[in-house]
Length: 176
Image (cartoon, rainbow, N blue to C red; front, side, top):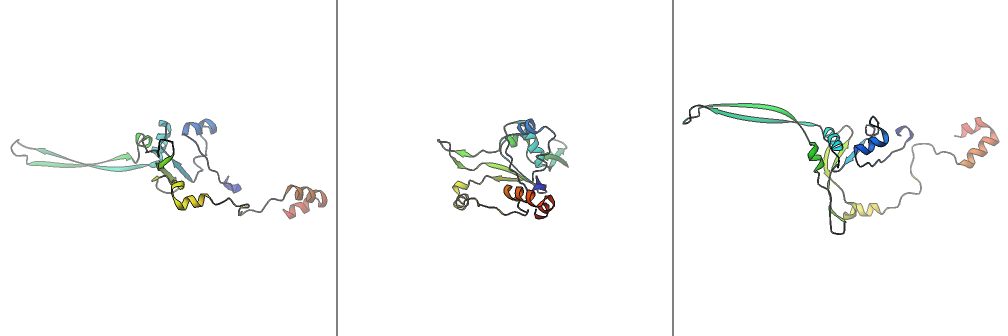
């Protein structure tokens, strides 16, 4: 899609759904620059999110004492380092969801994970644009009638037909 100047916004509920449609070895997630995730409902998705967040090193210090009961004179301290997921599978599944009122309207943002290519993962909160005055105003801006493009505009169908028929294929290519 990048070669064609197209940007996509894919929304899937979980990894199982993505794999069911595009196959297990699809390149869709690998080609996404930004990935946003909320609390998953399946352990498969939680495993992928946990692996995507990476690992950290946990340093654990242990002290042991030895000697007679009345005087513990010998103490030894050992330090060990172990790897731990930044976010385990069960922690992923327990990400706080948005809070809703009795009618089902969202009144408080939930948590989310943001994965931006080449950057550390971000643990954040959803933006509730409809509760924020600045974002609410931005959401009301109408879409432009015509967008900017880095690419040459394609000729209309009528231009294509008349140019190809009237002047020959070579002159048509010169115009495009």
